[in-house]
Image (cartoon, rainbow, N blue to C red; front, side, top):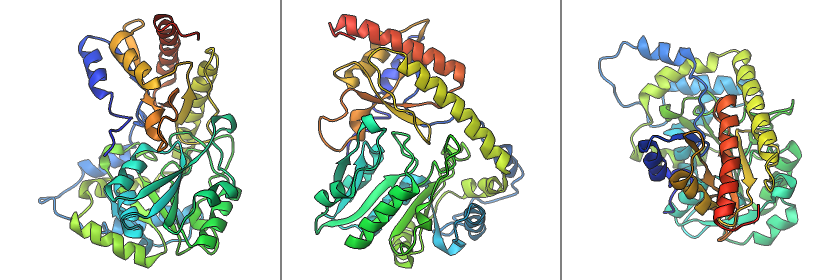
Length: 392
């Protein structure tokens, strides 16, 4: 199993904190937006004497609430199309294990969420990466590029929309391109839609579940972690109209007994939140995105495409080895008693020695902290360049 690029530098961050250095955490998608009060109200009013197992597929009432939310945003599913999981991570892991055998291949555009690589390795599934470029904001490659890597062992395509780590928002047309490929080659289409609400500049998210003729092919991964800033609740879902996939995934679910009960009980009320909640969160992240992108692009030698969704960006830095630079920032640099923790992007690539000068930045802090973090990063780059005789 590969080490997490998001968490592997954690010991260095902890060491910095013990020295009294403040660490701006731009390495992980942990929002600082408050979890809605309805979650805590449900938890505090709970009258329960025994915290028991729930059904392996999740509480019926919770699945019904989840389905109702989907219906309100124009996706025609019912509670029968849901299996509740321990976070979106378990949903994808169960989905991959249900649809792919050892030695089968899954095509994933890279850079990709690092745990996709881990889940594949856990099942001896082969990741076939397909390159995207920072020069066009990491847009979907052409059909021809997909055709080059499809083989008799290819069983699925996996994307995240909006994308983690790049923030790229796939359009309806791009998803229809993927539909055509999947229908031609009889492939599953896994789409991680946990950042569905985080879409900017008036654009609309198009769900893979609304693709025509794809009911047996589409498997959506979802979670309340980001949408409601409830990462620790660990509640995700597999959403698909393919009954065989749900039946297979349920066997994995039965083996782990049940998803978290408390997260479902407390989380039911979150699906009743008004549109104003989502609008407020999106408006905040637009401001954060704009702050980060404008500040980063003002640094000489830094390349930062403007993300269309989620709350991440992949940034090219004027360094030869971002892994070394990120570690150096934690071990050897501070400005006004603070430093910055980022995720080296090399861990988001399946192709070796790729993305060596890139980092993923999560703009999940308030705007003042983001400004101070980027100022710290800019000064760190200058000092690092001087110490390593690199021309910035």
